Length: 588
Ligand code: ARG
Image 1 (cartoon, protein in one colour):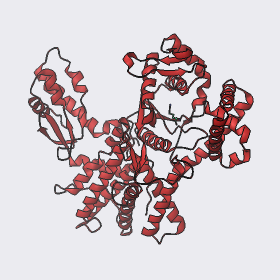
Image 2 (cartoon, rainbow, N blue to C red):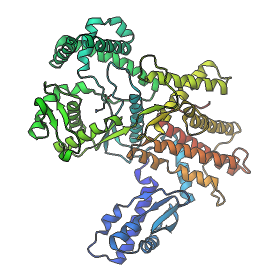
Image 3 (tube, helix red, strand yellow):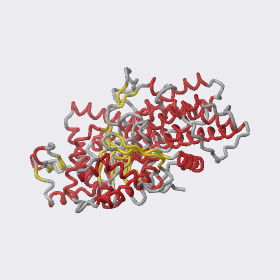
Image 4 (cartoon, rainbow, N blue to C red):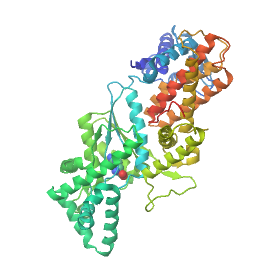
């Protein structure tokens, strides 16, 4: 069922262009130059509209390498393109780009593939045999999930989905913050003021209260800080009582965090492996770092990493009192992941506030020479709320559950207005999908590097680039298809090609780049490329639909073909939304 990677149009086309270039150069007989290496590097791009379906700069690269006119090279390459079933025509543009148009017959064969594969359309074995680790969510135990954890969870999960669909062997890790000096404070506070049954009823809120109280009281009584430090030390040394309390604290908190994941739906971790997992690996990593002279003595006997020419400030890995840190555990975790799983990439989906931290970590980690895995900080900006303050129950942290509840409430109001006839349960179920979909899509459709702006009106608009719009559009396509079915139309796949098609061809061309878009979104860690693509696809489909009658088409074969286009668009839309973790209701 999986689509072989060689099917991706750009790969097919690249192979053809490479063959053509090799043939063209055979005649030229360029001595002593490694033509084939240059040629095999060539990539195919998707140009701006009207410049063909694909384009390549192969002639520019070869022209530069051999000091020849790229336009001339381009024309020789074009002459040498082998017989094939995909390229219909080529044009030379600008200084020597080759623009490529694909054959409508190939587009039709792709259409059939979409219809046949249905929900499996989009899967490939592009990443076969390659491993990728995606680390995301990473909440801190005993603290409410912050909005940046929501961003990480949603962005990370969609990247995981994309890699998975591309056939990579993917491992998702939730690296929870379950170790560190804050547990000393929490244990002290719990023992002084805590109440077990209160915690079990409402773990995170209770822990937060205890934590806040600890800080208030510590201001008056400095001995408390000392007690907390000692308690954490006991914990690190494996004190039974401290460990039990800590364990309980983690379990109760994770139960609550899990509820949020369930509520978000579609969040899946292959492994929950937090900072505490690495607590017994601290000595090893410190020894290795010292031996390799990567960790050196800093102020007061601490251990630090130094960077040449003050590229980065020094990086603390052990405090002068011997305590290990967040950074120490990250070194151990990175080493463990590389050695245990042998991944080609490790993605860390973490907010950009930690950019410097990861630059320092990765730069220092390279010096250890653990192997070839590429560590990537998939950073994202802060979330800002457009002209509105969130009504938070406590203090000034925006809480994840409150954002989601508000999304659902607002979605309910819309469903209630638009579709008053639905029964209460249906309305609620749709509001849930729409509200959560809106929050997710709003995050995924923005460039993650800039601040992510949260704008309820835009997010929930039924027009424009929003989840409700896409969901609504999907539901509309499904309703057209239902009507077709009721009218007894069975879509047969024997399509007759017609040169006169305009909107249909535009739509087909847009459809066939779905696979490449997934590939690109994964390669650049940018789910927004996929979101933008889905939005554009619906725009092209809607302009087709307004210009070409479907159920009222002039003849049966045209009606059949146009319905098939709607079905294929709906399929891609649904599969794409699924990759983004967004559900598409059949009606809205
Ligand atoms: N738990 C951390 C936080 O909430 C994020 C962890 C990021 N991952 C890592 N490997 N350091 O800030």
